[in-house]
Length: 166
Image 1 (cartoon, rainbow, N blue to C red):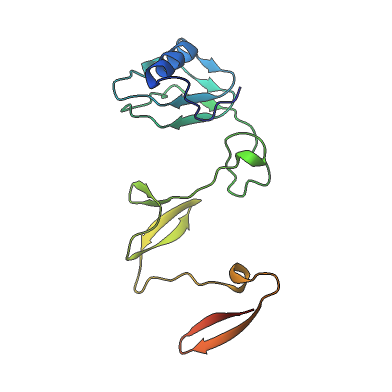
Image 2: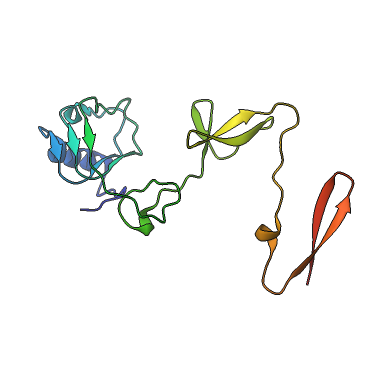
């Protein structure tokens, strides 16, 4: 069974389907997807879930809490070796998890703000305050090179610039 954020009908109907699927359930044989709940939806029916055979996806929810305190085991599937982050939604190279956000404080943001720069800490991309001038990203020959082009370095005091010749 694969779903991946599919919304069938209205959010109310989706909630009713989740209640039917997961109520009085302690073992979910495949994937547990808790999606599209609204603020007034009671997700207490999830409390009894102890084991999930596939992945757990919690996304697009407005409910204040997703009560999975009883969850003890997520079996999942091994990620494809080509998943460079080591994270995936399911088996196969088409399901690798990609990160396009960084953590700033307790929030996910697209880019770090002025006075901070991006670092990796314990496998998580975070924004960290700069100690002095912030490091700047530089284009590298590999990033800019295209077939048939050559490069020559132009030196300026304190920096190296790349100029494209065609």
